[in-house]
Length: 293
Image (tube, rainbow, N blue to C red; front, side, top):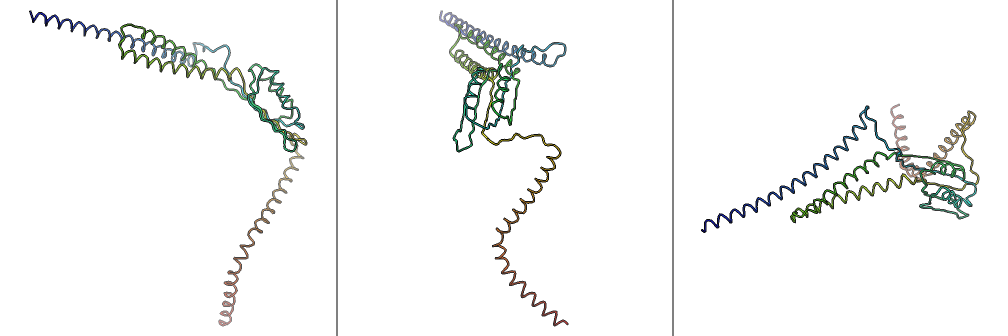
């Protein structure tokens, strides 16, 4: 009788352990399947990018609008600085932009100047860049562009992939047969995935902002007698060469004079001991020559 009870107890324990093992195995297979699908999806995306960029038979899928960041740098000279600040503000407003920062030095006794950092919609970039140069005489007018289409598309695809993985992990968390350790592990994985999504979405927002709103730096200074530099002809080149040569000779002479004045005290200090050595040596040598004769 007792042996029968022991046999029944052992059987129940065995069934319980087998059931737990099956649940754990089922959970592990589900996690492994999700990880495999995520990896396969990422691999498929990378292969698709590689095939699109290297295959000549399959056309590259390029977005209809490329994502390009435009920047500009303008340096102006005006003969009268009055009203320049307001004129730039009016131009920015006309082109639907805004001034992100500005510095204006308008004291009458000092050289007046101003610096502005403006943000202009990409569609208005070219018109604004040309219009702002009419305020004064442009010394520098540089434009630059950077194509970020590949990074933009890559971020969108990675965010989509991560969100799909997030959905799978949430599905696993909803299972009723999860154990505490499994729930803790899934929550950590969910936190990591969401952190990556937030980071990529932040970078995507930055790119989108810089693509939609271009950045232009403007510097303007006042110079009443400013004469724009002109392309020199042959006569001007000869004159410039002669002027440069005479200036170099004059600078060299001035440099020597300055050096001599600075070295004079040292020359006087050194002359005394040299005289005390050289003069007696001369007379001694002269006396020896007389005796030899």
